Image 1 (cartoon, rainbow, N blue to C red):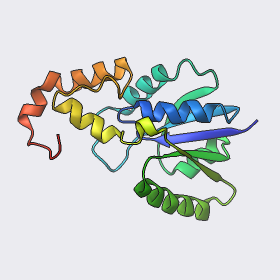
Image 2 (spheres, rainbow, N blue to C red):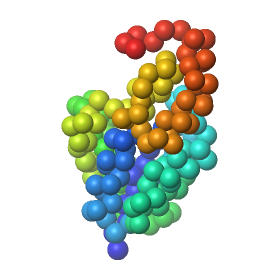
Image 3 (cartoon, rainbow, N blue to C red):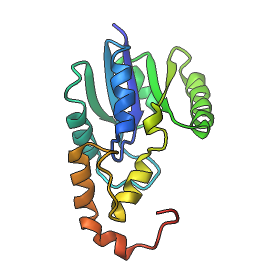
Image 4 (spheres, rainbow, N blue to C red):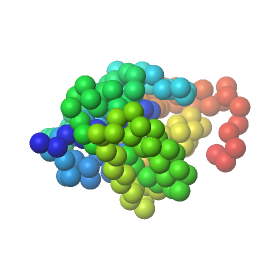
Length: 172
């Protein structure tokens, strides 16, 4: 049995993430979507909320399990017995970052492999950060995230009340 993980913060999960998950789930016997607990970036949703949103978003995929984790991703992989890490690539800057991370992970755990899947063209612009910015400013994100995630974002931003209190973000 080949077990892979797809790690990320998923704050929030987008249709781009779900595209990678769906495609990766067809390549491996089991895929663990690994939700990172405490990244060094601004997180809107708690770990429990992110795990719940991802679990609900992937419930139709029988070989996908969602699990939160802390610490090094390679340590988590060893703990669960995964041999492959799946990553998604949108643009060339993603490649540069993922290449650096792959080499670092290979140095720590040479027995583990990383596979990168190119995102589908329709999601190449999509990131959780962009989705949060659009939602915060009251824009429509219905084609970017599942309906339950859209509702959670609207609730988190109090239907635009936080947007008025924050400074203007360039581009939106």
